Length: 272
Image (cartoon, one colour):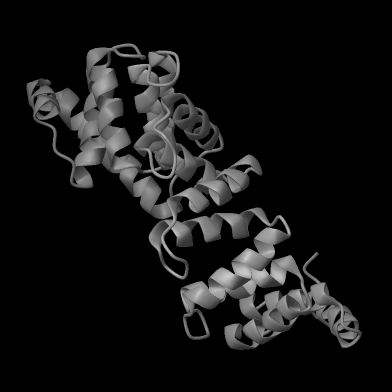
């Protein structure tokens, strides 16, 4: 409720009695600067005590600080041990972070098979990044056999949850009928959702959809707008360059103005 000082005082009394979650709460107050000056190092000390007392959230929080070297020296091996302890208590985000360490061989020996096991648990518990990464692992055959259906299933879950890169990848699957039914209309919708979040390759593909009338009504002006937006981010596409050049000057300028307005709005307010 924003009553940070009250929360701190209540938590401190509970911490004196050995309450693990109270230590975690105080750690969060210090680490994030809630109602007090931000002090990540002091927050880490409280997280460490909460972790020793067995609180999964403290184990995860302290592990994250160690993994990133935020406020304390980086120690990926120690972070891995803490993520393992939290994962044993069914902490989905800890499972996800542990999976990443196994994939990279960083803090844990590289082991894609164990990575998949932890990634799958996190994905099943609704961790969106884990759903996206699990879809990618199935698509590439990393730690599992290549499985287009499983790849599309998990990529689709992440896309529906609003993961911008997953929306791009899932749209491609929909357009190709790869592991999922061929649905160009839904694919174009996913390209648009990703494009509106600022994903440049999605903007190019959305422009192609409008240029060719795939999944949307053909609209060269809209195609030009999205391509010009992507071009401002460094994209290049010879066919779309020709489309823009072939437009009447008035339409081309209108598309350019629309693209510039979109980019300015995003710069002012962040991705839609």
